[in-house]
Length: 285
Image 1 (cartoon, rainbow, N blue to C red):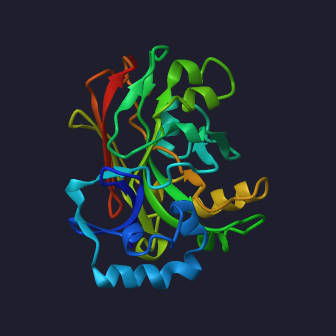
Image 2: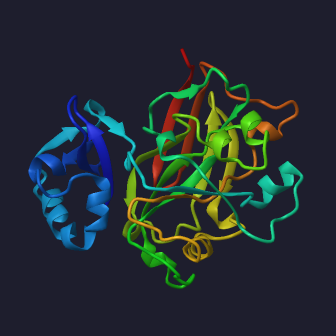
Image 3: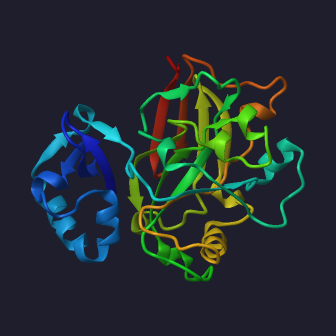
């Protein structure tokens, strides 16, 4: 199942994407769930109701007639791992990490799948990073790698947009990773039941139609299950939290000379089976 947050000109709604249509959960059952995090947190109780709404096919709208919003507009946490594809490690000329390298992106960086990526007034080296994003489905602490699949609700495409000058100004990456609009996700959440193996997905990034990144999630250095186990030793994962699982080689910063994003550029991230997100870049007023 593909679950989305969307607007048809009014307040945000929850929907089920079916081909070229989106079925509004919010219209079919206004009190079913407050938002995507509420739906995820109570999925075990609400799944049957959602499937009945899907089967009824009422309250369906043309997908092209609505605006897709970030599927989780206000996640509690955004956790992202660095240097997690061998080719990306090689292009950065850094050693293969012995331990997982984690940083946070602020929730305010979340952006809709087709909304503009804003190059801030103080942004001079904005880069793209295509990533598989896992959406947490339940509270989890001290889970093993074997237990980790039960923690994931679903998956979406993500772009870990990074302001390199700010990222490398200090040893802490949070500010360089957290500019407004620099965490586009979507276009919807594909539930884990529909994505049997997150470690066998082709992933690509295009800038103005030119393919810059082309890899597969089977090349993750630390796989998603090990990521979840590692994180849960430190903190409690909660429904709606986002895990950016790493980017493959081909980022603009590693090119000679570097090729950063500029106003007017169009960036597209594709992951097989999960869809695509695409955005124009625009300068901040």
